[in-house]
Structures are given as C-alpha cells and as structure tokens.
Image (cartoon, rainbow, N blue to C red):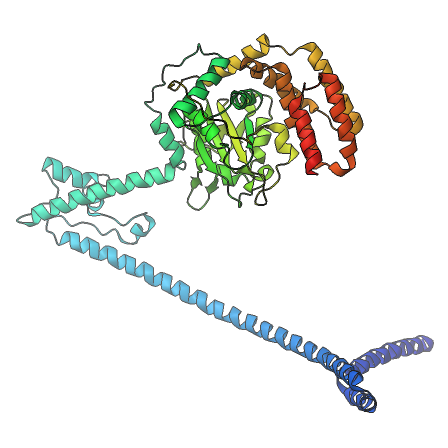
Length: 563
C-alpha cells in the first residue's frame, strides 16, 4: 500500500508541477516577462541603424498588441454576457407590462360595449337592450344596432332591426322625433352589417380573386364562328398579310413557316436575335391574328424559382398571390382557340431556375400529367378550373420566350434548348404592299389536326433520313455529339408541318440540324475542334450535295470565324 501511495504522490506532484509551470510560463509570457523583453530591446536598439530601429519598434509593437488584444476580447465578452443577463431581466419586466396593458385594453373594450348599449337604450323604448359584454370580444367586429336589437327580440342578428323597419310592428315602442332617428340608425346599421358579412365571406372563401374574375368573365362568353377550312399554307400567307395591313409589321414567309412548324414540334419557342428585329412583336401580332392577344410577362433579373411565375399561397392572409402568368394559364383553359404567353427577355434570369417545373411538366408523355400543384387542398369557393388545388396546363397554350445575347443576360443552357424550338431573327424583312386582311378564328384542336394531317401527307423521305443518320454517326464519332431522341421526335414533327407551310424537306432538316444539333458547338471548346469543323463542312456538302444544307454550313463557318 505504501508503494501505491508513493506512486500516486509522485504522479500527482508531477502533474501539479507541470500545471504550475504552464501557468507560470503564460504569466511570464504575457505579464512578468515584459521587463526582460524591454531590456533586450534597449540593449540592441542603440546598435541598430535607422532601418533596424524601425524594424525593432514594429516588432516590439506587435508583441505588445498580442496581450492587449487578448485583454480587449475578454473585456468585450464580459460586457456582452452582462448585457444579455440584464436584457433577460428587462424582458421579463417588459412581458409583465405587456400583459398589464392587454388587460387594460380588454377592460376599455368592455366599457365601450357598455356605453354602446346605454346609447341605444337612451334612444327610447319600453324594452331594454341587453348588454353583450365581453363576449363581443370574440366576434370579428363590434356589435351594431341592428344585430343587438335583433338579439333582444329573440331573432337572428340583423333580422330584428329589419323587421322593425319594414313591417312597422317593431318591438321597440319609440315616440316623437326619436322614431325617425332610431329607424334610420337601425336601417343603416343593418346595411353596414350585411356588407361587412359579405366582404368577410368573400375574403375568407375566395383565395384566388384574379382567377375568380376570369370565371366571371367567361360565364356568359360565347365563342366566335371558327374557320375549320383553312390550310397551313393559307394560314402562313394570311397571317403575313394581316401583320402587314393591320399592324404594319413585315415578316418573310420563311420566318412564319419556322414559327408555325415550331408550334407543331414544341410548346416552348425561343426567339433569338439582335434587338429591334421583331422578336416580341411576332408572337404578339400572331396572337392578334388569332383574335386572342398574348399575355406579355416581363422577366426580371430577380426571378429565382416557380413562385416568380406561378405565385404562392400566403399563410398569413389565406390568399394566393396570383401572377399574370398564372391568370393567363388559367384563362387559356377556358378558351378553344390557341393562346400564347410571351416571356419577354427570358434570359435576364436563369430559365432553368424559374421555369424548371413547367419544363418538366411539359415533358410528360400524357397531357393528363401536365398538372401544376398550387395549393394542397380544395376550398368550396375556389375557381372551377382548379381540381384538388391543381391546375392543368391546357394543350392550347404555347410559351414564347424572347432572348438577347449580351452582357446583361445569362446563357440559355442545353436543357432548355433541347426542349424548345429556337428561331433566329437577325434581319428585318423588307416592307411590301398587300390587300387588307382580317383576323381568323381557329380552334387549337383544328390547328393540332392540321399538324397531324401534315405528318400523314408529308412523310419524310427515307433517303433523306438515311443521310441524317449518317451525319449523326459522323458527329458521334468525331465530336461526341448526338441528335438524341428528343431532337429526332421534334424533327419528325417539325419537317412535315414546315413542308405543309410551303417549305421543303431539306430546308426543314437543315434548320433543325443547325439550330438543335450544331448549336451545341457553342458550349464546346471550339479552338480544339476548329480543324475538324472544316472536315465536317466538307462531309455535309458531300452527303447532302453542295448547297444542300446552307444554314448548317453558314452556322459552322460563323462559329469558326467567331472563335
């Protein structure tokens, strides 16, 4: 046992000695060692030249700053802890004061109700009006003359006053000039109470006011007589004449063919080009031609997520903050003709952020799955177009985005381009003269029928498809680029409609290859494949004939020159 005690004493003594040594070293470092530091400083300071003296002063000042900084931090932390403790004590007193003031407010409201009852009784009458007291505090508004009198008569709120005024058999026996005053006051109070009740009911039950107004607008709406005999080629020519004669806007037939064929291939079209070439006016004039003006939504740089375009439900007000975009989507579902929403300057913010949900929904193979979740449950007064809080994107709706490529915009990613049909507008069409042309009325169902009819009547030539597959294999081998299933599907939808609008198969394929496939070169390091691109141009001219794909060749040459 004595050996163990000796062991424990020696071990603990060593630990204590080390602790004391550490504390002593720290005190010597920060407190008691400054005399030695200063003696060393003065011993060498006199022997230094000017540069050495400056360096010595700076070094010594840095050493002094270390303990000073430690002391400042400790003092600051101490003051913060004291303040937090003091604030906690003050908060308790403040909470007690708030409770006392709340009690005073309740007492004052109770006194106000007593005065209101006395004021009504002072108007005369044989029957006293009961005092409602503190129970009124549970109501949404203070009691009025009408509902108080009605309660006294044993009738529902508001009915007693109305009966007294209308039937003349009032339960209050008033005399003299007080009769007119009392009757007028009760009638006025009854009307005010009824108005307040209606407004409260609307505010609570209707959380989609804009969409409800759309329902009201189309409640008695009668659709126009639709023209189901028009062809796609006539559709292009008549729109061009309408834009010229009615709106003084000029477009080439090629641009209109691409626009209409793009509608057949995708629900999202992106109009690109330099400013002033008519990117916004094209869908706007096209919608006016269909007698259903497009909704213009100006994209802001702050757009970050779906709430910027669809809105959101405010839990505090119990209302849905609706946007014009949401209203236009809802209204499109109540119309039979094609509808358009224009996202003006869509790449001022990142499209793949704020438009991500709609891009995903439009990719669903079944139209029944084109559903946007707005709210989790259905309310009785919700608009009739909402089902279980969900809104279906109608098949008659197209989204048109305009995009500029400059320093103020973001690059549109491949995810967006793959789902859209891009159309470049880099030149203004020449003005021309034409006969006046009126609007047309076409249902979206008939327009879709024309698209399907074109796919049957203008089947893509098998030889042309073989050439396209050879080009696909060449791009995969040399550049690791592929057409992809989505682009192939869009090509089968785009080219027949493009031909039905007056174009050629080769022209339609040329446009898809240039804008959907070769555009991916812009996201690659072109400097490494510039020489290979020359071989690609030669392969295209060899496969499709010289001048067979002019858009694709011109696009590749432009990329070579640009980079």
